[in-house]
Length: 347
Ligand code: CP
Image 1 (cartoon, rainbow, N blue to C red):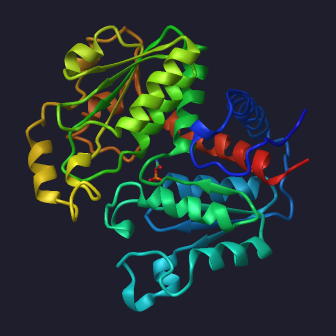
Image 2: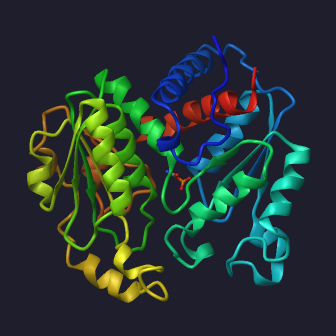
């Protein structure tokens, strides 16, 4: 069976065919089984993955590093602000002293893929700039570029979540899947909920997006989700009431994000106070046992982690019998190993 896909890069799953996504999930399950049985699977022996992190990470960094090692390759961690501009560490704009075009072409001479995480403060919270920088790397790199989360998309998380639902429920088709905003005291990107609505509609789910007014996702991404639902035979709707949205759900994925209306380019700079003022009006958007009781009995509670306990969700729910958050975190490893094999092997 083929171990490669047509696509050169993974920036958003929206740019991969359904066949490529199915192949990714199928191979992820094969690799998961091999790891479970301790069968060696060094499909990327001698290959190198460069990982550029402009933001912190627990899951993404460690699952990519462990994954490339299990595949027989090597992962190299690069923290661009700290490595290249120690005097300015923490103050933004990638590769001020080197152009992205040069960095991408140099790394292409040394290794086999470049993975990048960039959103939020490193791009002054300018929505879309992280995505543009990942695309700039992809334009100049001769080797695959993998998006480890930009400000628009988190494709590896989205695919790990689809795999988790398929494992637990068999299919997304005919399942009511609620992707909901949740309260948090901090500013968080839109990449996860946007990847969730794109992927869950792609795989035929009946997707409800729930959020208070003023916390709309990117309208272009929402239009893609509607189109995906039409093409897959699923459905897509928006609800402004968390309780109503949860009624009869098979899956709930409540997660905080910041209001786009207070982010550049809609504003000159990130208007954090206004964003928090709006979010603070909706502290009741927390997932509690009472809200879980509105769903189907065996509803799956999902979250990409890290979760803000006591704000987004109660301990009782996230540590309770409906929670699959650790399975999601584990599936990041298997899905990313699959993505790396498909992009880096090129048989
Ligand atoms: N879910 C996720 O991407 O986690 P990290 O931020 O820890 O990588």
